[in-house]
Figure 1: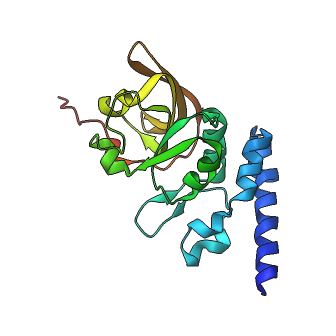
Figure 2: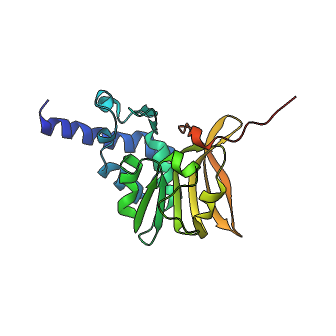
Figure 3: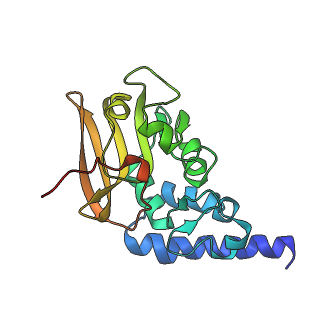
Amino acid sequence: MTMSGQQGAASAARRAMIDSQLRTSGVNEPWVLAAMFRVPREDFVPETARSAAYIDRAIALDDGSFLAAPLVHGRMLAEAAPRLDDTALLIGDGKGYLAALLRPLVGSLDAADPAQAAAAVTTKRKQGAYSLIVIDGAIEQLPVALAASLADDGRLVTGLIERGVTRLAAGRKAGGAVALLPLAELGIPVLPQFAAPKRWSF
C-alpha cells in the first residue's frame, strides 16, 4: 500500500473508532473527538500492532505496559475537562498517546513514570503545583505525596480498582484531601506500582 493509502486507511480507522466506539458509548464532546481524530494511535504501538491500533481493547507495548482502549482515554479526557490555564501532571508515558492528546489542551504538561510517582518523585516538588492530574491506568491507592501535589480544588482523573474491578474515577481536592468518585466500570490497564499493601487475614 502506498503512503497516501496507508494514511487514508488510518484516517478511516480513526473515524470508525469515533463513530463506533466513542459516540455509541456517550463520548460526544466535540473537542474530545477532535483530539482523538487528530492524534494517530498507530504511532504509539509496536510495529506489529499498528494494524490493530484502533481495536476496542488494550494493546501490549514493548516495555510491558499497555495502551488503554480508545474509550478509556476518551472518557478520561472528558472527565478531566482540560483547560489552557491548567498546569497538568500525567502519570504515564510523557511521549505516549495520552500525553499527545493532553498536551495541546493544557497550559503545561509534566509527566512522571508510574514507579517515580508511586515513590513520590515528580518534576515539581512543591505541594499544590498542579491543577490537574491524570493517571493513565488503574490504581488501588493514591499516594499521599501525589495527592499533596494537587492544588486546592484541583481535579484528578484515574482508573480505580475496587474488589478486583477497574472503574473510571474522578475527584477534586478539598480540605487537603482527594475523594475519588467511581464513575463507570471500564477495562483499564492496572498499574501495579500503586497496589495497596497486602493485609494479613486469618
